[in-house]
Length: 288
Image 1 (cartoon, rainbow, N blue to C red):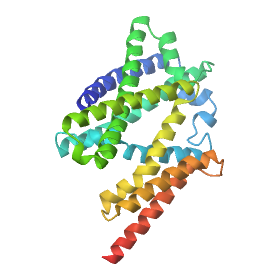
Image 2 (spheres, one colour; image 1 turned 120 degrees about the horizontal axis):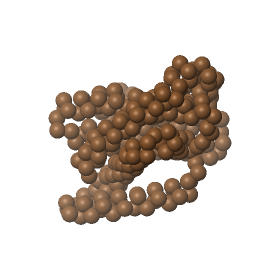
Image 3 (spheres, rainbow, N blue to C red; image 1 turned 120 degrees about the vertical axis):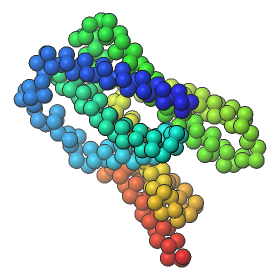
Image 4 (cartoon, rainbow, N blue to C red; image 1 turned 90 degrees about the vertical axis):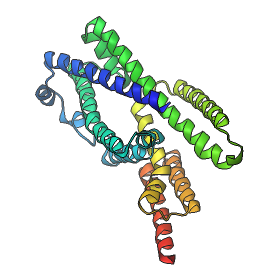
């Protein structure tokens, strides 16, 4: 699964770069140069990093950082590398290659705004492909978007299924787990994850995709990030306190918006999780 995801990732990265570069060229020919966009569109909200509010945008930024560092599939990509050097090069290369894709996507969205087209964010790139690009290339670009969506979903589903089968099931059934049985459990877990994801997607069909992305990243970060970092850099966090740190973090992150309390739940969840971990690290070092 990891090797397949790696191969798909390389192909989708090349196709996605090609698609967005062509979109950027088309946008440039339409007169939507970066300078023209800055000149014709209002600075707020289109060129503001805090268009939705400082606390909300900082919370989204934190969600992205801690969620990425605490996500199973990203850890799998590093741990399954052929060597330490390959893992480092892959991580650095990913950090370099990702920002241009985001900037090109923003360019396309702002071009549509400049043209006076108001559309749902999830439909902006497909609309641009169908409207402004030749049909033959548009078809290839649509296939690229399909591969990108499918590959991303496959990787995240694999990460969740691996967590369920190896981190949960294997922890309680270690004596009964053969390799063939673990393969079966992993496949069943993967199927369940896909079915649940399908149901949620159908229920939330008209919602903003980016909000779900920030939410998922934030929840992962609130529960996993602090215990993971404590284990890597300090190595003295007790299992019980690690569990408590994660549970408290994700509980606060989930309950805060439900109870409609002021502030950002994910940020507070991470802070509460860090406070518990810091207390346990201090206590363990003091006893030593």
